Amino acid sequence: MKKHKVTVITTIKNEKDNLQDFIRSIFAQTRKPDEVVVVDGGSTDGTIEVLRWLGDFYKGKLRYFVKPGLNISAGRNYAISKAKYKIIAGVDGGTTLNKDWLELLVKPLEEDENIDVVSGFFIPEAKTNFEKYLAAVTVPIEEELRDEKFLPSSRSIAFRKKCWESVGGYPQWLPICEDLIFDIKMKNKGYKFVVEPKALSSWRPRPNVKAFFKQYYNYAKGDGHGKLWYRRHLIRYTTYATAFIILLLSLKENILWLAPALVGGILYTLTYYNRFFRHFPNEKFRVVLVSYFAIPFLMLVGDTAKMIGFPVGLFERWSGKIKFEEYKA
Image (cartoon, rainbow, N blue to C red; front, side, top):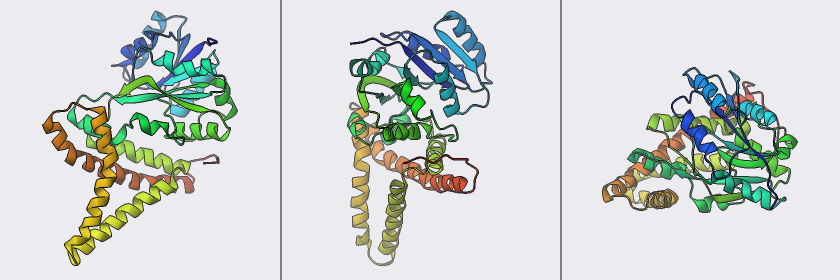
């Protein structure tokens, strides 16, 4: 197996409280990074001072750049453009890494020159019951990552720098969901993707309903900007419209009209309950009981955010607010 030197890149903004632990976790890996490149998007909370201190402490191994105003795509592109080595591992601030994350993430690229992109696996770092219920709605389990259509998050990814160069990097015109289009462009080029489920990282879900709604609203708006998942969004609108019609009929005609809607709703939630029990197999009875109410509620919140955000994103694209680039979805 041929060893390659690896650059770990990350973009941050206002991460003062957890930046030291995050950077230390990268340098504490069983497979040490050959360099770490950090791009700060213009922090105002003291992050830059901490970054300077870390730059001195890891001198020669950590390089940082302060670039106010850069979005995540532009920050990632800038970091990769400064990378010295041909293997790039990407991770987001606020992520907790297992100690063998980098070793396992890079290993497939070193063992097989035909593999171009490796996705790590994610587990929730939930500390409250609300975060556990939200993890069931937002964090997939391992089987879901084995789908050929799965597009890895740049929160935990490794790829050959030549792939990034050949597709023109991350789409800087897109403020969110940029990693999905980056993945799509690489898949369109024929690059081979694999998932390494043992390369584990984790992060905390959003702490409350308001933050979750905003997150999914922005995700769906990004889908609209990038013309992503038309069919998936259409199915969602159709499903909720059908459920609403059935509800009206049950109130007006016969309560039995609710039966197919209830069956459909139960089937719709099964995936998320399966996730909950897989993520948190030993929960107390009280926590499990509340999950039967909390998970459907959070699904409704997330779906509502998506149904509002998607048309907003489409409108901003069509109105010219987003200066988009064409690509094959």
